[in-house]
Amino acid sequence: MMMVYGMMPFMRQTLPYGELQQNIDYRWPTNNRFGLRPAAQYIGPGDEKITLSGELRPEITGGAISLMTVRLLADQGMAWPLIGGSGMIYGMYVIENISNTHSEFFPNGAASKIMFTLSLKRVDESLTSMFGDLNKQASGLISCVSNLPGQITSAIDSVKSAAGSIISSAGGLLG
Image (cartoon, rainbow, N blue to C red; front, side, top):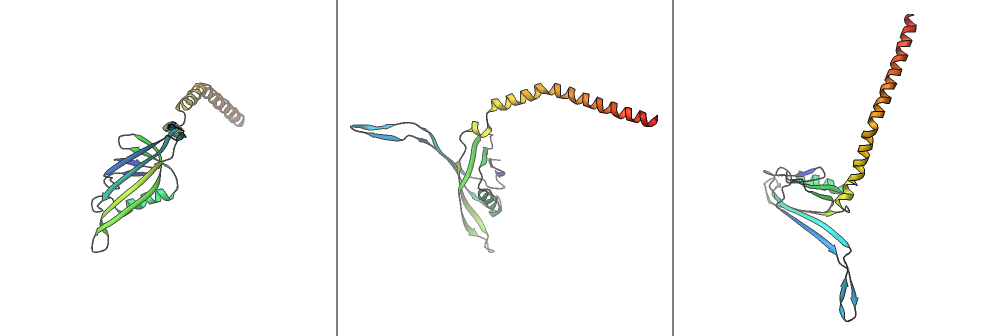
């Protein structure tokens, strides 16, 4: 697998891309000053976009069905995680644009060559915001585990009490 976007894996059988282009902008607005160069100030990262392009040969690779799957993801209007085949997490992305060109047709009108371009835009603030504060999550797990012995003891006491009631009731019936 080369990459996965949401539930769509990019691999030879689906949408093998031949080129991945990543563009990251940084924001540096300027203020004009008299007699001097404009003053620039860094105010944070800007847009981050990834463009995937490739060629499909439906008899070997994915075809129109794979492109339709990506289109259905785009139609959901949701951000999906983009994860590289090596495990690199790129972030949460939306599909901004899908373009495809069909050529070299079979006698039945189906294309034997489909060129595609998929434009993605990152919409999460950072990987930290995507996953939440891991420290808080770990603290929550630790407190749950530390309360576990008390919860187990309480459950055992409840089972003992219920078993005692059942035995008493059975003894009363047997008489």
